[in-house]
Amino acid sequence: MDIDAFISVHRPQWDRLAELTRARRLDAAGIDELLSLYRMTATHLSTVRSTNPDPALTARLSLLVHRARLRITGARTPLWKHARTFFWEDLPATLYQARWAVALAGAILLGSALICGLYFGLDPVARGMVLPEAAQRSLAQREFVEYYFQGEASGFAANVWTNNAWITVQAVVLGVTGFWPVYMLLQNGLNLGLMAGVMGAYGGLGTFFVYILPHGLLELTCVVVGAGAGLRTFWAWVRPGALPRLWALSRAARSLVTVAIGLVPVLLIAGFIEAFVTPSGLHPALRIGIGVVAWVAFLALMLGRGRQVRRQGITGDLSEELVGDHVATAG
Image 1 (cartoon, helix red, strand yellow):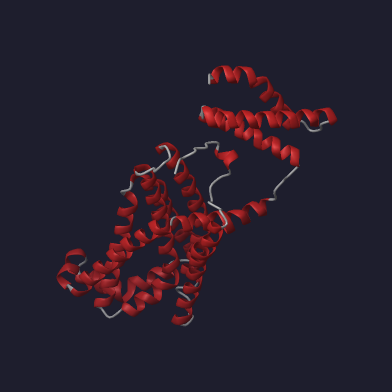
Image 2: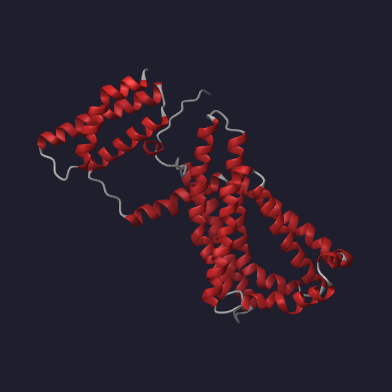
């Protein structure tokens, strides 16, 4: 099909349909014309997709058909319904789809933290090569706990949220490289392990867990989820499967955006816990319990709700009209 000739022949119809969708009021004749042009343009969109999937034309016709459908049905979805759909359907579906990549990212983080913690905790010579003995003692006896009492709690929460969101966004955005998420996970794992090793060597391992677990369970899970989503984008680039590489990468990138937006309020909760619960005077068991409840709730959203919506056919991706690209694959 000659795409230029196709556009030249049908452009007046598309321009007229766009004009009708923007009109404030339509009489009976205008409504009939709108319906007729809507059906015609939908047929044009199907033809373009199946014969010559030009991305620019497909996107234009998809948006035009979508707007015409809204004008015909008169549907206006409230903002709160969009938010509910995103957080209760799209986000869980996307998180569940990334579960194996997230599990790999979690293994990298926890494995590096465990190895590093045992190494530095059991070998004083290795600790001394990284931190002088005086710095180790200061960290274990004073600095580790004092960190959570810096300034006003609300300001500390904002700083924590900003820092964690920035780390997660880096993992998400640079995930296509395949290198940065792994580097970030190893770096965080090594720092966590070094801190645990030093605290353990000076008899402060219990203090370490009391001050890490309340917020760390949720916070580190967010980092792992962001890194896992980034690795999925890299894998879509390396092994696109039956889809063209660019389209597979585009689909993974859209899921990446969903994860990045969805983690923002979760990191806010983790920052709130770190600022107001971790350094509070509550019993250590209660502080850890609050962190566990928040962590389990997130896992329930990711795995429980995610599995449920995936069984319903929800993918978390944009609708076909808005995506615009359609690929038929065999087998």
